[in-house]
Length: 316
Image 1: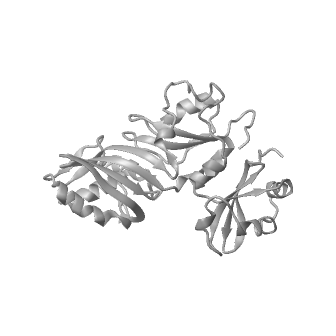
Image 2: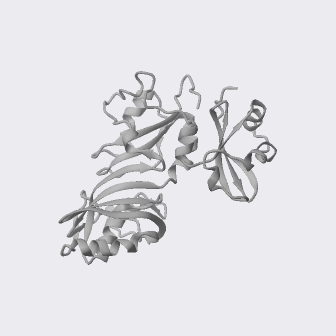
Image 3: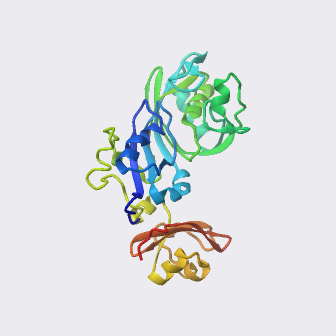
């Protein structure tokens, strides 16, 4: 994505530290880039750490395609005590005997595949226009309706009573705090999540993330915005989206909002990237590039094309 002279644009992989909120973690980035046009695409609880995807400038338009990615975690479950927040910052609300390792391993299969999950009462989910966490703190007991999530893989990595470490690969919207609660209940115990590290989002990995060291955003604003990545084909590939390359005439038509069917129908037969995963008539989103630069996200629904977003700053 070409850089605007006044507002930098692109993606930063951030390693959020424990003890700060997701919002506060953006402070150094905003200072380093010199803009408030910065946003994360998925929160991490204050006690948690790990990978956050941060978009800046025009790239913020791409938030929907980064927000619904699958995620991977390492979580520590402390058995014996459940807290009201289901994390180490909450107050104890229930106690139970510790389960055995065998009991924990036996119940894990209940939580793989498509499952229904009740989010924590202390969460950002809105109920009748108010956050559930605000209702809970005011003394109310919000009714948290179950909703579908998908657990692709769930493993017990270590067992050191009263703590177990689990690995989770899950869909967007999955609460690992709720998963810890439910695993404990199924094993005849109670528990809370005592630690959490997000290790991967889609194809983006924690080991490639900026450490967030330096309160003035060192490493971001200095040295040519070292950790700001353009929205290029490698980023689109990490999202598992197909892509098309178009010529200048086609790019001009896209920038001016011309009907997409005349521009993309032929190219859509042979998209690149994750093309092998597509089948005839399948609905999907795809990225459009001109001269290697990101131009737009487009979507095909019921055989018809529509615009997702367009980068108005593309250089022709």
